[in-house]
Amino acid sequence: MRTRLLPLLIVLMAGVLLALGFPLAGSLAAREQQRVVVDRIDDTARFAALAQFVSAGPTGSAGPEGGERLDTLRSELKRYHELYGIRAGVFYRERDAPPMAEAPGGWRLPDTGESSQAFDEALAGRRSHDPPQVWPWQRGRLTVASPVVRDGDVVAVVVTDSPTGQMRSRILHGWLVIGAGEAAAMLLAVGAAVRLTGWVLRPVRVLDGATHDIATGQMQSRVAAASGPPELRRLARSFNEMADNVEQVLEQQRAFVADASHQLRNPLSALLLRIELLALELPDGHEEIASVRAEGKRLASVLDDLLDLALAEHSAADLRLTDIAELATDRVDAWLLVAEREEVGLAYTGPAAITGWADPVALSSALDAVVDNALKFTPEGAHVEVSARTEGDSVAIVVSDGGPGLTEEELARIGDRFWRSSRHQNISGSGLGLSITRALLAAGGGTIHYAPNEPRGLCVTITVPRTGPGENVKTVRA
Image (cartoon, rainbow, N blue to C red; front, side, top):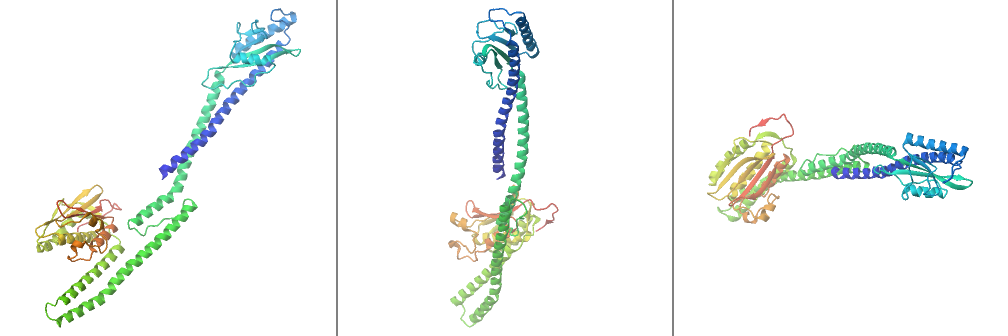
């Protein structure tokens, strides 16, 4: 979720910063150009004041006083050009007439372009006030014109044509400062977004971990509702209340099964004793009494399995670093007498030593149930093979038999409580053995999987993790 929420926040903040940065950059460029325009307007106004009293016309010569003023104007324009590199001139109304004064010498106004437009505006009595914006990537020039007014008439126009290199450099420098500020703000925003998403999603991660723990059987897992938004803290408290209620209901369920199984054993034992006493008064080989005796023993077996299932679901696993291969070999040796009696081959194949994390007692009980089930359904002359191998981060114990196997529908139901295949109803059992096995394995982080065996039979795979919760471990020999 963080990988989806964090980019969204970053994109939104980047959009806000860009929405603020572009107008700010445009405003800075306009401000710099406006400052230059105002400065040029002041310069043209000063030159217009000098040219206002020059009496020479386009074709005449100035008097002594006018000639002195004209020389002063030309000298000012020349010094202005030499000092600032700005072309400046005073032009009569007639475009084709020689200018009153210009610097550098020989400079003339173009017939078209911004200079011509500024000249026409000044002839109309207006100063240049809004020339087009010059951007840093443009190599244009900035033209400003002011009218020279005498006796209420525009007699000439002062025009300045300025290079824009320095102005564009200042604009670019300002943009770099804005960009650096935007980058710094973006970094701060990203840091704030990371902290914000961490603060918001930390309770979600804890809640997800607790949910996974409960789903895998760790019912004591809870969420500490101490951080995050109020809504998530309230959700964490509600989750803890729900987990408490679920654990209480499951505990009551286990206690009921255990108590019922335990309490039914005494009357059932008494009933079986009375059946045996009754059998003594009946003739030998009585079919009904034999059937009643068999059903009574089956009921006793079911009660024992129910009690074992309740204990398996209730008890916590004692995980230890265990030699899985040696444990499997030991259980195979323990079942050899039964296999010989059933005339079924039974052997262990695989490495001599493989370590994994498991509860040795629970794993032994689970393996006993699987091997017992394999021997029950394997016909005479067939073979049951037990092997062990490593599979990535887990250790697998595989029990393959040569029995009739199961269909796809039956494989989907195997391990359900009290479920037995309709084809195997004549074989003794309560239908709880594999359920007990699954509960024993789940308490220690193990799993059990069923698949068809080739060419026939059932293949049962028990897996336990190779890594455990701690480093200081004790190796247990089964």
